[in-house]
Length: 120
Image 1 (cartoon, rainbow, N blue to C red):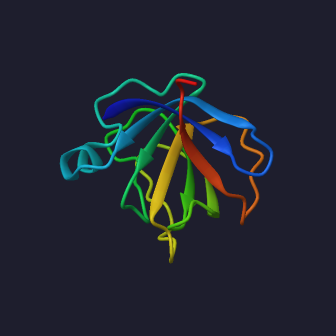
Image 2: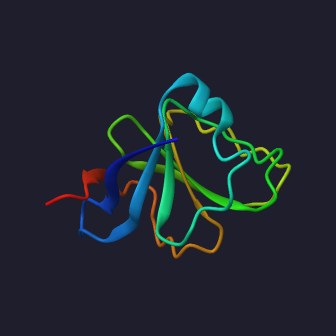
Image 3: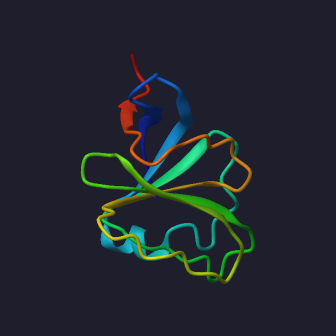
């Protein structure tokens, strides 16, 4: 996972969804995901690209998954996904953003999410 100093916001209203956005956009990082890592802290999220389906095998904690299309619009919100489960495959998804289970996600299909620099 790579920390590029980004956060995740809702494009429509500027609502902050994650204060620390981690990236898994290389093959090995996508393959591993959160396996072997402690649960994401409140305010953290993992951006996996390209990706249209995730699993929680070998993880000891649940997650929420938000599926985005090529322009960052929400296609589906899934979760909480307990350990040893597979999410649905979401047609048209290009990105999956994983959040800690229980994160306050009030997202609707069609909302656009943006990764922005945390440095002003």
